[in-house]
Length: 308
Image (tube, rainbow, N blue to C red; front, side):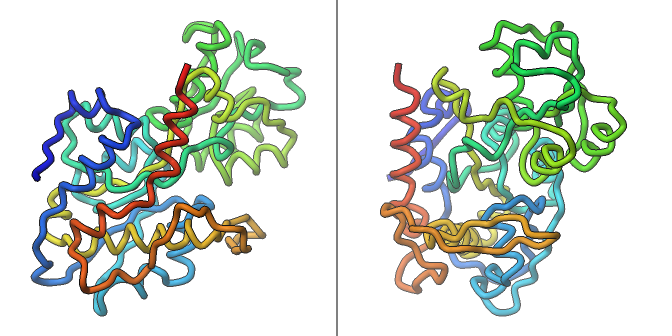
């Protein structure tokens, strides 16, 4: 049975298992005639992709001879622009910029929901500012990278606390420039993600709001893996391999924590719903591998958390 999804239908089923199934089953069943280069986006965040890159997980998972190019990206808006401009093939991205890209007609597909974001992003305020709550941001300057999940987070945090866009001065700041503005006292607060969030907290900042605080209000964002549709059609074998390599890190219970300038791993009990291997078997097609269970936990969690 073929599955066709339009942008209009995608929004109707956004956040449901139907949306996930429709996105993943779109991969054609034909082998890649020639293994070429795959360009994977990454930002150094403590996520499975960073771990796979540091431990040669991708190199070991892909067919021999596959050329892997790691592209450094600062945030969702840059990721979407790179995918649309054919300078990136596959990447982890937050759901807000991903859905915006769908609405704009960007030729990409979501192939995997990696995690719901609860603590990985948040609002950090300068201790010297005296700000103790989101409501006290009125008249203050807040740094955030526009068109990202962090931008989505601060706008919704303001909304549920009765603040309008005119009440707070939001400054469009790239993550790599955030600390410089913070250290010079040019911003009173910042809404960003790890590891930048931790760096601000270590320099006289306190986190007073995080993305998980939006959940009781029926607002949820998640991280997902997206791929250019043209690349997906030309190299169908590489797409599920990339996804299963990421899933193997997530499901093995490996977590990443910053230590100096390197990410190191430590074991943690694995989710029971995850049973994936980083080595796809030859007996299953790309379509079947992408249709395997494994998203049940996150999708059900989203259903439960968004009920009135």
